[in-house]
Image (spheres, rainbow, N blue to C red):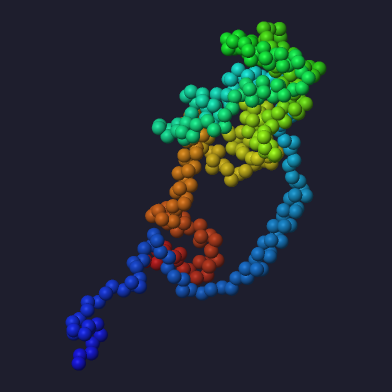
Length: 346
């Protein structure tokens, strides 16, 4: 009887099969040499404790020295109190439909030609209007109709609403010209004489409503138990110049590279610099679709970041840029070893 490894009962020789455990070829772009050098003990608990105590001392000390910014929130009331003429000038653009919000397009309205697009790519248009806003009704006429015991205001609102569009345009156009020379004295808005019709009463009483704080409540009113949707007051305030002036004072405008949630917290959210950067780069900064361009660029960068481990070349950048040698400089100084995957490992 023949006894041999690799034979079957028939006596034929079975060809050798490739081993599944055979080591694959080493590729510097993909693989790292296994470390066979010395190891040093590392007390993780000690390092964590020291770092924690240092951070607590640092945070406590800085909070005592610099305190925390506590700027008053920007509301429609504060806007009308600090910049009454700007409020009136913005309110008239909401009434005649020429404000930024009124002409923005989706998701607020169907203004023609306002959707941002890159060629055929126009998600703003595809999604359409899903937060419908009529600035004249939602920001001006609607809130005024909620005022109790105000027959003169209701009469002015009814007169304006029932007038022909051409007559409405004549009143609002005259008011827009007059408000540029307006002043605010003795608690009232003063305009030069003009044919303003009921618009003068409408804007004047809307300003009084705002200065009392009632307009903030009217813009937030909803059928929900908790009013947490600040879309309307935020859009109304953003259409004026007051919020932009505050942002410039706090170094928060786009060309000042600022962005934050709370005014006064200089220099803001520094981690958002990459997003705001693109608004300062031509031709994006002069494009009518700047928001879409910036969004597309950030999505592309996000995808590249997610795929970084599998993209040849990009995944090798940390090895080509020897920052790690600075971090572990004491190790390389003592051992004289070349970095893994470097010239010493071929």
